[in-house]
Image (cartoon, rainbow, N blue to C red):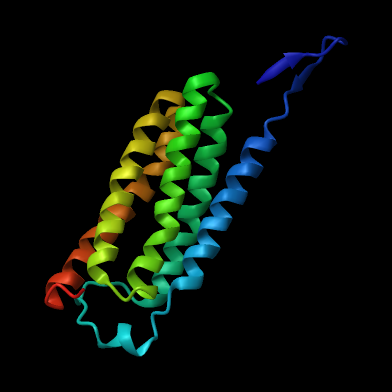
Length: 170
């Protein structure tokens, strides 16, 4: 947002705190989730996985820019909202990031692809809700979330196939 300073010059109003808070929340989510993932554990390696599953290194390569786009979208949308609309946005994002961080624990730590499937399905629904709330605040921010929503849907499909291939797991 640009405002006129007393001198008549245009100044950019500070908007970085929303971006910094969003980046901190997303970084916390990423680190929390990553600590629980062990794609080289004996348990995980014994699971039957579909041939279309990306290699383990690809997940970090995909999640890194996705987390950046989530932080951008959150900061961008938060700067364009206020009052109840901002509270709804922040609440939807907080719930989404909690679900995001919990999936790794549900799947890897609990060693339960079935519980992971519930978690990733809820994450996908939550991501669609964040997208719905964000599009009301700012279309640019919402567009930045589309790859995240697509990846969550892909992850749910992948998780469902792992459950199917392994007899439902636990």
